[in-house]
Length: 254
Ligand code: PEP
Image 1: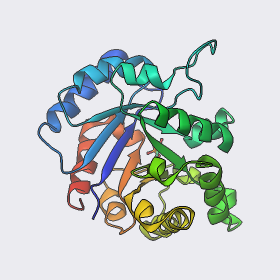
Image 2: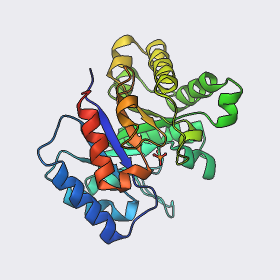
Image 3: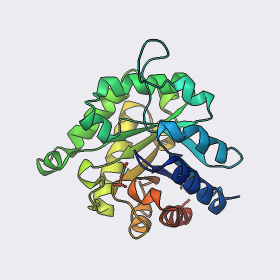
Image 4: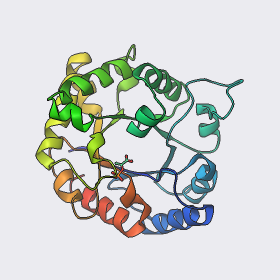
Protein backbone atom coordinates (compact mmCIF):
# COMPACT_ATOMS: atom_id res chain seq x y z
CA UNK A 1 0.00 0.00 0.00
CA UNK A 2 1.15 3.55 -0.73
CA UNK A 3 1.75 6.12 1.94
CA UNK A 4 -1.47 8.10 2.12
CA UNK A 5 -1.43 11.84 1.46
CA UNK A 6 -3.92 14.07 3.29
CA UNK A 7 -4.05 17.68 2.10
CA UNK A 8 -6.01 20.55 3.62
CA UNK A 9 -7.25 23.25 1.26
CA UNK A 10 -7.95 26.27 3.44
CA UNK A 11 -9.35 28.23 0.47
CA UNK A 12 -10.05 31.96 1.04
CA UNK A 13 -10.64 31.59 4.78
CA UNK A 14 -9.17 32.65 8.13
CA UNK A 15 -7.44 35.74 9.48
CA UNK A 16 -3.67 35.74 9.83
CA UNK A 17 -3.97 34.96 13.54
CA UNK A 18 -6.41 32.11 12.86
CA UNK A 19 -4.16 30.68 10.15
CA UNK A 20 -1.18 30.79 12.51
CA UNK A 21 -3.24 29.23 15.32
CA UNK A 22 -4.47 26.40 13.08
CA UNK A 23 -0.94 25.76 11.80
CA UNK A 24 0.45 25.64 15.36
CA UNK A 25 -2.22 23.18 16.51
CA UNK A 26 -1.52 20.92 13.53
CA UNK A 27 2.21 21.23 14.05
CA UNK A 28 1.84 20.13 17.68
CA UNK A 29 -0.64 17.38 16.81
CA UNK A 30 1.62 15.97 14.10
CA UNK A 31 4.98 16.28 15.87
CA UNK A 32 7.15 13.29 15.01
CA UNK A 33 4.40 11.76 12.87
CA UNK A 34 5.28 10.49 9.43
CA UNK A 35 2.98 7.53 8.78
CA UNK A 36 1.01 9.73 6.40
CA UNK A 37 2.07 12.64 4.20
CA UNK A 38 0.24 15.76 5.30
CA UNK A 39 0.05 19.09 3.50
CA UNK A 40 -1.72 22.38 4.12
CA UNK A 41 -2.68 24.93 1.50
CA UNK A 42 -3.36 28.37 3.01
CA UNK A 43 -4.10 31.58 1.12
CA UNK A 44 -1.07 33.15 -0.62
CA UNK A 45 -0.77 35.93 1.94
CA UNK A 46 -0.41 33.49 4.87
CA UNK A 47 2.00 31.11 3.17
CA UNK A 48 5.24 32.54 4.54
CA UNK A 49 3.98 32.53 8.14
CA UNK A 50 2.65 29.00 7.80
CA UNK A 51 5.86 27.79 6.11
CA UNK A 52 7.83 29.19 9.04
CA UNK A 53 5.64 27.38 11.59
CA UNK A 54 6.09 24.04 9.79
CA UNK A 55 9.75 24.56 8.88
CA UNK A 56 11.03 21.86 11.27
CA UNK A 57 8.18 19.43 10.67
CA UNK A 58 7.24 16.80 8.09
CA UNK A 59 4.19 18.78 7.01
CA UNK A 60 4.20 20.15 3.47
CA UNK A 61 3.01 23.65 2.75
CA UNK A 62 1.69 24.60 -0.64
CA UNK A 63 -0.29 27.19 -2.59
CA UNK A 64 -3.82 26.83 -3.94
CA UNK A 65 -2.84 28.15 -7.37
CA UNK A 66 0.13 29.66 -9.21
CA UNK A 67 1.00 31.54 -12.36
CA UNK A 68 1.82 29.71 -15.56
CA UNK A 69 4.45 32.41 -16.23
CA UNK A 70 7.97 32.56 -14.82
CA UNK A 71 8.24 36.30 -14.04
CA UNK A 72 7.51 39.72 -15.47
CA UNK A 73 4.55 41.99 -16.11
CA UNK A 74 1.72 39.79 -14.82
CA UNK A 75 0.00 41.97 -12.25
CA UNK A 76 -1.54 40.08 -9.36
CA UNK A 77 0.10 36.76 -10.20
CA UNK A 78 2.42 34.64 -8.05
CA UNK A 79 5.18 32.60 -9.68
CA UNK A 80 6.48 29.14 -8.88
CA UNK A 81 9.88 30.60 -8.05
CA UNK A 82 8.29 32.91 -5.47
CA UNK A 83 6.46 29.98 -3.86
CA UNK A 84 9.66 27.96 -3.74
CA UNK A 85 11.55 30.95 -2.35
CA UNK A 86 9.33 31.18 0.75
CA UNK A 87 9.43 27.44 1.46
CA UNK A 88 6.48 25.94 -0.40
CA UNK A 89 6.94 22.46 -1.79
CA UNK A 90 3.49 21.84 -3.27
CA UNK A 91 0.78 23.54 -5.30
CA UNK A 92 -2.83 22.69 -6.15
CA UNK A 93 -3.53 23.05 -9.86
CA UNK A 94 -6.86 23.00 -11.66
CA UNK A 95 -9.15 23.02 -8.63
CA UNK A 96 -12.76 23.00 -9.86
CA UNK A 97 -13.32 26.46 -8.34
CA UNK A 98 -10.50 27.75 -10.57
CA UNK A 99 -11.92 25.91 -13.57
CA UNK A 100 -15.49 27.15 -13.12
CA UNK A 101 -15.23 30.56 -11.46
CA UNK A 102 -12.00 31.71 -13.15
CA UNK A 103 -12.45 29.85 -16.44
CA UNK A 104 -9.20 27.91 -16.25
CA UNK A 105 -8.96 25.62 -19.25
CA UNK A 106 -7.11 22.34 -19.59
CA UNK A 107 -4.52 24.17 -21.65
CA UNK A 108 -3.91 26.76 -18.89
CA UNK A 109 -3.75 23.95 -16.34
CA UNK A 110 -1.20 22.18 -18.53
CA UNK A 111 0.96 25.35 -18.60
CA UNK A 112 0.68 25.70 -14.82
CA UNK A 113 1.66 22.07 -14.32
CA UNK A 114 4.73 22.62 -16.47
CA UNK A 115 5.59 25.80 -14.56
CA UNK A 116 5.25 23.96 -11.23
CA UNK A 117 7.60 21.18 -12.34
CA UNK A 118 10.10 23.69 -13.70
CA UNK A 119 10.21 25.23 -10.23
CA UNK A 120 10.49 21.92 -8.37
CA UNK A 121 7.04 22.19 -6.87
CA UNK A 122 4.93 19.04 -6.46
CA UNK A 123 1.56 19.62 -8.09
CA UNK A 124 -1.78 18.18 -7.08
CA UNK A 125 -3.79 18.05 -10.30
CA UNK A 126 -7.53 18.22 -9.65
CA UNK A 127 -10.04 16.56 -11.95
CA UNK A 128 -13.72 15.76 -11.62
CA UNK A 129 -17.11 15.92 -13.28
CA UNK A 130 -20.11 18.17 -12.67
CA UNK A 131 -23.46 16.74 -11.59
CA UNK A 132 -24.99 17.06 -15.05
CA UNK A 133 -22.00 15.28 -16.56
CA UNK A 134 -22.38 12.38 -14.13
CA UNK A 135 -26.12 12.27 -14.82
CA UNK A 136 -25.35 12.07 -18.55
CA UNK A 137 -22.93 9.22 -17.87
CA UNK A 138 -19.98 11.35 -19.01
CA UNK A 139 -17.76 11.06 -15.93
CA UNK A 140 -15.07 9.00 -17.67
CA UNK A 141 -15.10 11.17 -20.77
CA UNK A 142 -14.70 14.38 -18.72
CA UNK A 143 -11.97 12.99 -16.49
CA UNK A 144 -10.10 11.51 -19.46
CA UNK A 145 -10.27 14.86 -21.23
CA UNK A 146 -8.97 16.70 -18.14
CA UNK A 147 -6.09 14.22 -17.86
CA UNK A 148 -5.21 14.37 -21.57
CA UNK A 149 -5.33 18.16 -21.74
CA UNK A 150 -3.73 18.73 -18.35
CA UNK A 151 -0.86 16.33 -18.90
CA UNK A 152 -0.24 17.17 -22.57
CA UNK A 153 3.41 16.68 -23.53
CA UNK A 154 4.47 15.69 -20.02
CA UNK A 155 6.83 12.72 -19.94
CA UNK A 156 6.57 9.72 -17.64
CA UNK A 157 9.60 11.10 -15.77
CA UNK A 158 7.70 14.32 -15.14
CA UNK A 159 4.49 12.68 -13.99
CA UNK A 160 6.13 10.03 -11.82
CA UNK A 161 5.11 10.65 -8.22
CA UNK A 162 2.38 13.11 -9.26
CA UNK A 163 -0.70 13.52 -7.07
CA UNK A 164 -4.07 13.60 -8.78
CA UNK A 165 -7.15 14.61 -6.79
CA UNK A 166 -10.43 13.20 -8.01
CA UNK A 167 -12.99 15.73 -6.86
CA UNK A 168 -16.49 15.33 -8.24
CA UNK A 169 -17.67 18.93 -8.43
CA UNK A 170 -21.10 18.00 -7.06
CA UNK A 171 -19.46 16.77 -3.86
CA UNK A 172 -17.30 19.84 -3.13
CA UNK A 173 -18.58 21.89 -0.22
CA UNK A 174 -22.06 20.39 -0.60
CA UNK A 175 -22.04 17.77 2.14
CA UNK A 176 -22.76 15.17 -0.59
CA UNK A 177 -19.97 12.62 -0.81
CA UNK A 178 -19.37 10.09 -3.53
CA UNK A 179 -19.92 6.62 -2.12
CA UNK A 180 -16.64 4.79 -1.49
CA UNK A 181 -17.50 2.48 -4.44
CA UNK A 182 -18.27 5.40 -6.79
CA UNK A 183 -14.99 7.10 -5.85
CA UNK A 184 -12.97 3.91 -6.11
CA UNK A 185 -14.36 3.21 -9.57
CA UNK A 186 -13.25 6.59 -10.92
CA UNK A 187 -9.86 6.25 -9.18
CA UNK A 188 -9.36 2.90 -10.92
CA UNK A 189 -10.29 4.55 -14.21
CA UNK A 190 -7.72 7.32 -13.58
CA UNK A 191 -5.05 4.73 -12.74
CA UNK A 192 -5.85 2.78 -15.93
CA UNK A 193 -5.80 5.94 -18.01
CA UNK A 194 -2.35 6.77 -16.63
CA UNK A 195 -1.25 3.20 -17.37
CA UNK A 196 -2.30 3.50 -20.99
CA UNK A 197 -0.87 7.01 -21.42
CA UNK A 198 2.41 6.08 -19.72
CA UNK A 199 3.22 2.68 -18.23
CA UNK A 200 2.40 0.55 -15.21
CA UNK A 201 5.29 1.87 -13.10
CA UNK A 202 4.24 5.45 -13.64
CA UNK A 203 0.57 4.67 -12.97
CA UNK A 204 1.49 2.90 -9.72
CA UNK A 205 3.71 5.77 -8.57
CA UNK A 206 0.82 8.23 -8.72
CA UNK A 207 -1.24 8.95 -5.64
CA UNK A 208 -4.91 9.57 -6.26
CA UNK A 209 -6.67 11.54 -3.56
CA UNK A 210 -10.43 11.76 -3.19
CA UNK A 211 -11.94 15.17 -2.48
CA UNK A 212 -15.52 16.26 -1.86
CA UNK A 213 -17.03 16.75 1.60
CA UNK A 214 -14.54 14.44 3.32
CA UNK A 215 -14.88 14.69 7.09
CA UNK A 216 -13.96 12.77 10.22
CA UNK A 217 -17.14 10.72 9.91
CA UNK A 218 -16.69 9.42 6.36
CA UNK A 219 -12.92 9.45 5.81
CA UNK A 220 -12.17 5.94 7.03
CA UNK A 221 -14.56 4.24 4.61
CA UNK A 222 -13.28 6.28 1.67
CA UNK A 223 -9.59 5.90 2.53
CA UNK A 224 -10.03 2.14 2.96
CA UNK A 225 -10.78 1.72 -0.76
CA UNK A 226 -7.92 0.07 -2.65
CA UNK A 227 -7.50 2.85 -5.24
CA UNK A 228 -7.80 5.78 -2.80
CA UNK A 229 -4.40 7.03 -1.65
CA UNK A 230 -5.44 10.02 0.40
CA UNK A 231 -7.81 12.97 0.51
CA UNK A 232 -7.99 16.61 -0.43
CA UNK A 233 -10.05 18.15 2.34
CA UNK A 234 -11.70 21.57 2.21
CA UNK A 235 -14.12 22.56 4.97
CA UNK A 236 -13.04 19.93 7.50
CA UNK A 237 -9.39 21.01 7.21
CA UNK A 238 -10.23 24.29 9.00
CA UNK A 239 -10.97 22.40 12.20
CA UNK A 240 -7.73 20.99 13.63
CA UNK A 241 -9.46 18.12 15.45
CA UNK A 242 -11.39 16.97 12.39
CA UNK A 243 -8.32 17.24 10.19
CA UNK A 244 -6.16 15.31 12.67
CA UNK A 245 -8.87 12.64 12.93
CA UNK A 246 -8.81 12.25 9.14
CA UNK A 247 -5.01 11.99 9.21
CA UNK A 248 -5.16 9.31 11.87
CA UNK A 249 -7.79 7.38 9.87
CA UNK A 250 -5.40 7.52 6.92
CA UNK A 251 -2.56 6.16 9.06
CA UNK A 252 -4.37 2.84 9.41
CA UNK A 253 -4.11 2.37 5.63
CA UNK A 254 -0.58 3.62 4.97
C1 PEP B 1 -11.90 21.09 -1.88
O1 PEP B 1 -11.94 22.28 -1.77
O2 PEP B 1 -11.01 20.58 -2.58
C2 PEP B 1 -12.89 20.26 -1.19
C3 PEP B 1 -12.91 18.99 -1.41
O3 PEP B 1 -13.76 20.92 -0.35
P1 PEP B 1 -14.78 20.23 0.72
O4 PEP B 1 -14.00 19.19 1.47
O5 PEP B 1 -15.24 21.35 1.57
O6 PEP B 1 -15.87 19.61 -0.09
